[in-house]
Amino acid sequence: MHVSPLVWALTLGGAVLFLLVDVFVIGRRPHEPSMREAATHLAFFIGAAVLFGIAVLYFSGHRYGTEFYAGWLTEYSLSIDNLFVFLIIMTKLQVPRHLQQSALLIGIVLALVLRGVFIAVGAAAINTFSWVFYLFGAFLVYTAFKLAKEGIGNEQAEESADYEEGRLVRWLRRRVPSTDEYVDSRITVRQDGKRRITPMAIVIVALGTTDLLFALDSIPAIYGLTREPYLVLSANLFALMGLRQLYFLIGGLLKKLIYLSLGLSVLLAFIGVKLVLHALHENTLPFLNGGQHVEWAPDIPIWLSLVVILGILATTTVLSLAKTARDARSVS
Image 1: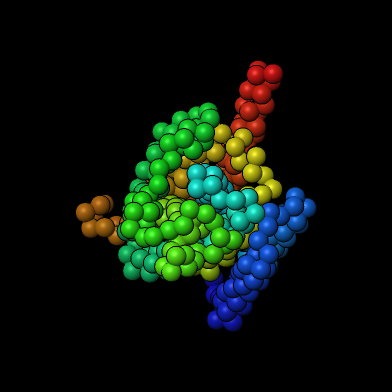
Image 2 (image 1 turned 90 degrees about the vertical axis):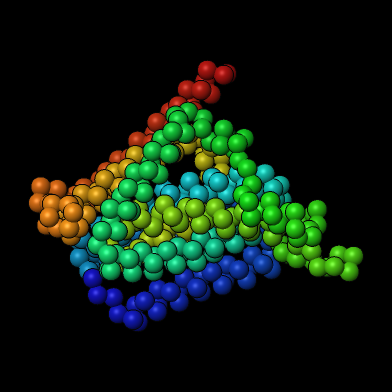
């Protein structure tokens, strides 16, 4: 897939422009968005992603268009799981409702930066070492196993109860003077003649460390669906840009997706196996099959990957909502 420098520049410039507008508007007027505002913005970002995929289909062909949609859906589903952890963090740190939009925006910007770094590192590793697909595949299967161990049912409530602050957050609390109260969306303030951090700074660090962990999962996952850095980047951009609106629109629904971790574990395991099979198909390791390609290893086509991804996400959502509905009826 050939992407000209102009297209790269326009894509990155458009993303930066949206972020700057968001930062300027939210920074000047932090508030809790209405349902109508959140729904309008979310529909815009989803519609933009769909139109972008159609453009890729038209200009670059069926294969790359399908790769974009598969990558976007995968990154979106992983980002929703990320969003739930954001909800836990802001609940634990008692972020005022009207400041949560600012905190979410900061978390999303950090996620974009970290994923950009991982995308560049992943692309360089793939171009230099073909065997890196073995590592990516094994890591995703391991991650899927960990997610599956969380169990089926109301695992998210347990996750909220068991949430503990990271070492960096605990270090900040011990070592850096801080205030007890939020001061709008400011990160530092001068108090008693000393510069102190506000609780918002703690929130940013907590969100940033969480973003780092999720980037470790999401980048290998999308490289299992496409090796085009432009599609990897654009899928991540579209997956992250609508998360803030999604948080306020379906915050209650997130708690009902009780099988989300299980569904993501199946999704990551599938992509992990796909990566290992692809690595076998293009094997160059001298100690494996004499450094020759393993011809019997099937290379799962991208259209089948898209079907599987849609099936997993649809099944997870339907079963989760059905289970919560049954539980609600049994309680009443």
